[in-house]
Image (cartoon, rainbow, N blue to C red; front, top):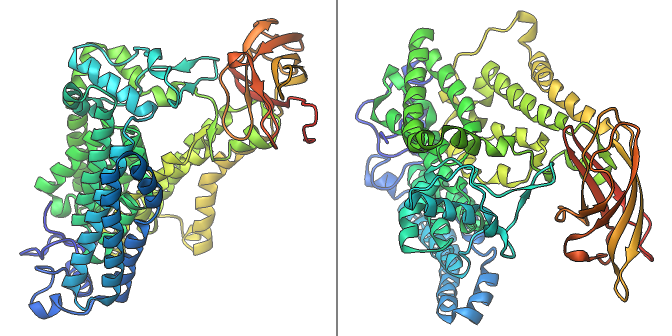
Length: 604
């Protein structure tokens, strides 16, 4: 990357780059002021006196927060290591000592240079703890298992898309994505780069650990790159967000390809308004574009960030260069990213074009059952169901488009949030698990710490009518852009379940459970439905129940009686919880829930 023209972004450039604000003087003044405040040791500020200046109190606070974050989850790791690998426990005990020393030093050191060394020490301790946790847990979850199998297929010249691998999910603890059609997805559903990088590792490490090693290595590399690219006072915050709290390291140990996407997106979003400054993409811009394409070839989450980034970049460059040059530069940037993405996908697209396209689009098309912490929970957990679940998907798409339109209209205000806004759309989706929100949260920090508001002050915005230029009018415009998505949610929530159920159970002898369920089902809707049955207690869903008798399809206004048996032939009633029978249909997407009666169970 080129030396940063933004505060704390590295060594001072020999000549000031073209201002992203459109006027050179204010940018020069802003850089001077911020550079003095966040001067980095050894180059960000002239003279040793500045490097030895007393660190800002908020810098000490960031270092202390990063230090404290390393405590989270460490005792559990130490406890497990003491039983399995005492040498690891001893190393973790040394890390405890390092955490305490770093905490004291963060409060006591007197110079910026010394505090920068403390920040580096906190990063090293965090990396060591990540390695220790990986040594204890590296078997991976379903993402890691599928990636390792895809890597094995690549190494042997076999296709990786549209290839079901059901035996991978026979082991306990490997989650299976069930679909609304009553089946499950056993195929690889990610772009190929993570599997490509895992393939040579898998030749040496013949297990799922090959995939988790790549994802954990990508997280560690991304954390180090982000740490180096941030202004000095923000660096321990990066340590906390990337490696502390044991949030992202857990996803890395499970083999999530998103960790590779995160690492590749770090140089893309750090000081992103610099890209193409002065009308030249330059070496740094090309590197950013290549990384963006590679990130999109790693995991689909990068796809959602890309349009927001391109819209904001065009607005910044148009404010500086004018419409034609800004459009040409944005096109070159986008084209370079597409070439990078195309090269990484070319082999698989040529091998099996249909399978490749279906595979990389799978998370968007697989019609998986409901899961997550978003508004879909209303229909899943808090009501008896909904006959219009597809409206949650419509709401998600409309929210994404509405937020993108709001970014176009008000990029000067929302430009700093381009790495946050895309994930809001998942809150309305039928799959709204919090991993979609948190796996790329370090990018939020990368933008906030390296992009000053002045970089967006002269970005181009469409000229609104005079009556819409007030603060309240602008808020009303943004609200209007979001209204369609909210209305779709309202339709999904207000739509009643399509089926009515009367449930009786066949209790198991000497056990507080059941071996079968008889349910009388009536289709109250106007569409023929094909029901699929599962149970739930609390969150989530069981495996599919077997239909022993009853019609396979249910026409409108028809009724039938089903006899169902749970997976394994027995389903126990959970203590102090209700047990529900849930009925899913795929076309249209619907859900109906009913309480399974249990002797002595509390009323609903």
